[in-house]
Length: 192
Image (cartoon, rainbow, N blue to C red; front, side, top):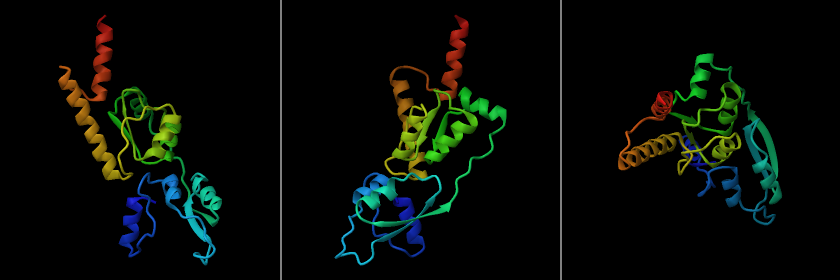
């Protein structure tokens, strides 16, 4: 659970008792989850609704510190149909300047149905777990926001673009989008 999930709970009138202050992931939640204490905790059961593809990290971690976990599949993640061939070629060919991944499953699914984004494409991941999955799939991760939320992801991507543009200006280079740099590099090679 992270800040976005906590905010959604508050909209329903529920105040979360525990929100990770560091990494907002299963690991971050486990770092702050107290071990079961049979004197302080009259009930030792945790209800954990989650996706069918979620890792066992949270379940195993809670059990390790003494909690009984009722692990329930609340929803299923299914792979989308592959995009049309021109879109797949655009992804692999570098026609997109950036790809934003909002979960590990989006990384696995995109690579599975369309292939890896071109090396010139900026890869932005919503959080550390998603970034690890992207790296495991051979992608270079350029952007990870300080908090895993869509707004923070967009802000971090914009900041990254400003920094890249500032470096290019400082080096006396033209400021080009990644897709333009890929095309400019191809024109330079063809002139040789």
